[in-house]
Image 1 (cartoon, one colour):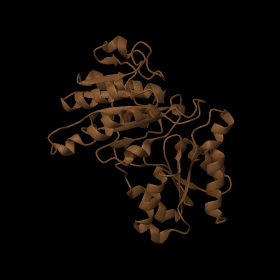
Image 2: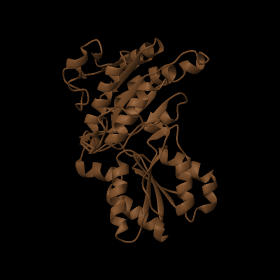
Image 3: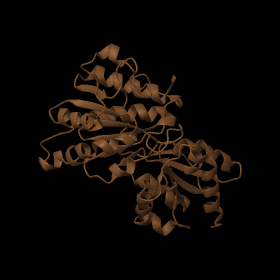
Length: 328
């Protein structure tokens, strides 16, 4: 199978969905001639023209509002927020309108739109361009939240998100854009709401999201040399959450660690921890569920401080070793 980058996988998914369905169009800032802030939509303007690759003024509320309005009238828009942080300016349209309209109209209205959000730290972009805000949207009924961690998942989940008849918040980590992996050329979909066991192990269940999946896999390689085998699970979709593989894994290993980049307070790790504690896996736990997450601080501009503000491979190794060896 050919190998392409996460960014190229997203672009191919967008192109193929637009070729398949004339109702699909892209809307956002600098997505046309410039090709998007991170190059995802490069070249699509030449193929589809300005009526389907729509450059907008600097107005996130306008982008989101257009997505809501177009989707409820039968189109399938894909809106891009240059940086996930900027979605705060579009919360009214997404949360108060897009997330609620299908419910308020008794199911008679469908809102098939996708909001793509480039998030996460690691590029030196500082506090206003580096946040991980996915759990804000997990909290909102009516929204689906997707967070792919590989090129294969990025394309398959994006194609599913565009075909979905409800609003989807699609989070892409900026450091993953250059990551390469095997991706089929043909169209394929990955069901929304299906977790993936990306590595099997017996000593500790690690539930990781986004960039923390490859970091957890790297940590697993290091710990394997010490005889510690991590089982790594990627939820892929935060909402709806596929709980069964996580519960079965925790029953098998007896221990769980949740790893995400977003700050710990109010983060997705708390939701995973509570789910495990409320399930049949509770009776099999040999240790408390632990969370490893970003510090409760804005992301610093200083690259050294930025590095230490979110979990790195060495932090996952240290935390996992403590849990397995019961040295808390």
